[in-house]
Image (cartoon, rainbow, N blue to C red; front, side, top):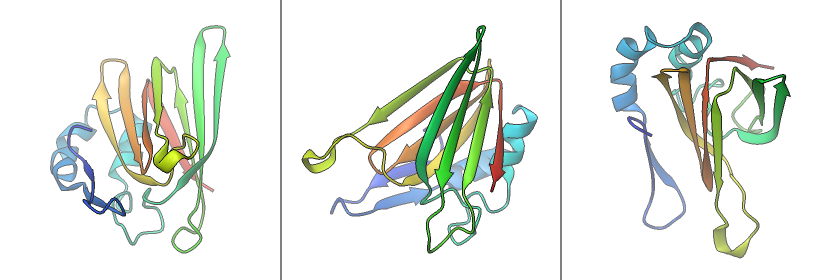
Length: 151
């Protein structure tokens, strides 16, 4: 990520999470983001770690990729953390140009993503990019726009 900091602590049990650099430039960046991406990134609870609509600690439970005659869409369903969130989050990306998933294999287990730590939405020549950092991996999506709904 360019502005958001997600760094493992030295004891490997936790992360130093700092969205402050991103929050400082977000007012300027948001004007260059597509409408759905701008609304999602600038929501007041997005980076409020105590907020019920903060993305931290969600878990990816489902990803669906659809190629409809060259028009690619992608949907992520993120389930809530029982002690923090009131609902889950669904993110739908339109006109997906690329996506990449990097999953690690922690401590000899099967590769997995783990819990969402933080994310970053940036303007891109195709519309926007959305990088999501998890405890054991990351996802990067480049698309025209996204629609995020809390269910």
